[in-house]
Length: 396
Image 1 (cartoon, helix red, strand yellow):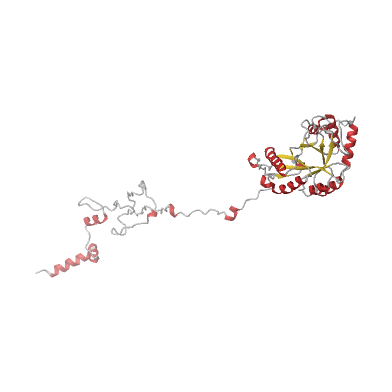
Image 2: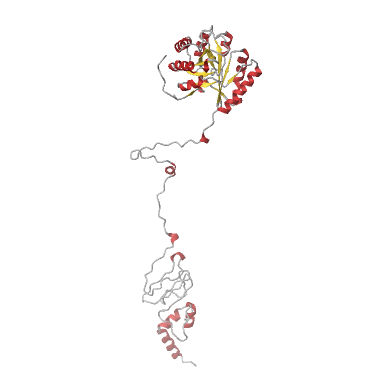
C-alpha cells in the first residue's frame, strides 16, 4: 500500500513550484522544445535550448519578431500597401528579413524605428487649377493699350481665284433722224443700245432729247466724204475743207444735238483715210472730252489710229449687222458677233433702223444669256490710249 502521507507531501511540493502552477493552470499539456521548434518554423540542433533572441524566416508578407512576441501561434499579417515592418524589441537583436517582393530592403543591422510605408496609389493627388470651359472657348481680347493694332493683310489673289468675265457685246444704231418709225423703234430697244443721230435732220432733236431722258449713250453720226461721191446732206465734212472750215462745221454739228457723248463717221471711206483731216477732227473732239468710234468704212482708215495718238477713248467696229436686209442674213452676222466676243472678250456691231433689223434685235436681245454673252454700253468697250507725243494747241 502507498503511503498516503508521502503522496500528499509530493503533491504539495509540486504545487509550490511556479512551473507546476502554470502547467496545472494550462488547458493543454506543456510544449517541449521540439514541438515549439516545429510551430515557429525554426530548425535548431538537438538537445540545445532555444536562445532568448532568435531569427525567424516568415513567408512573403510576414513579419519578423523576437521571442518576446505576444504569441508564437498567432501570425501578424499587415496590409500589402504598408510594406515590410520591423518591430522594435526591448533588447537589441539581430534580425534578418527576406522578402521576395521587396529585395534589398533593410540590409542594415542597426536598430530602425518603425515607420509606415504608404503605397503611391494612396498618395493624395495635388489639385490643379481647372480652367472653366467658357474661358477655353472664349477668344482673349488683345491688349490694345500696350501693342499697336495689327491691320490684317488680305491674301494675294491668284489667277485661279478670278472668275473669267462673260464676253460682252455692244450695239450701235446709225442713221437716225430721218424717219419717225426708225426713231421710235430704236428707242424701244434696251437702253444699252447706243444711238447715232445725223445732224440737221427732221427727227434729230427729238431723238436726242428722248435718248438723253433714257440715259442712253448718244453720238453724232458725222457725215464724211466717201469715195463714191454720194451726197452727205447738211453738216457734211469734206477732204477739200481747210482746218478752220472742218473744225467750224464739226463744232456746229455737235452744238445742234444735246447730250452728245461721242462721234462716229457716216460713210467717210475717203475722209477717214486722210491723216490731216482726221487730226483736225480728233483735236475738236478732244477739246470737248468726247470719244470716237471708227465705223471702218474703209480698210485704209486712219481714224482710230489718229484718235489713239490724240489720247481719245476709242474703239473700232467689228460687225455690220444688216448689209443684207433679211432675217437670215442678220442672224448670221449676229452669230458672228457672238463668236468674236467669245474670242476677244468683247465685240461691237453697227446696225441701221430698218424694220427687219429692229424686229430681229427686239426678239434676239431677250435671250442673250443662253448664248453666254452680255449686252453692255459702248462706253464699256472704249479703250483709253496714252499720248504718243505732246499735243499741239496751235491752230492753222
